[in-house]
Image (cartoon, rainbow, N blue to C red):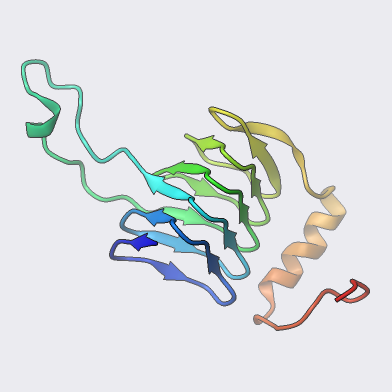
Length: 144
């Protein structure tokens, strides 16, 4: 695992082995990043004619935000500076190039919304739970 400076992680966050996080990644409570997840890119200027990329400089660091209760699948790539909304799921191998709405399930290259996890009523119930102090344990009624 390679984590650069500026990581802020909430309670009960899991970061899988061999993941690489660029600077300034903020992760909300209960989120899981599977193995080989990378938060990378957007760290070189490449639009200056007559200047090799290696000499073109780097833009200022930007924050990548991963909301609460997010699941990022194995080998997904997240470009720096995006926001993944609460409760979203990023499919294995997806390349996320833009913001992901809350509770969206995204996949593909580039990632696109496939469907949503909850309807509006369920979304509100889940947001209320996320607003509470963090807790331990299993979901009521779920087998252990």
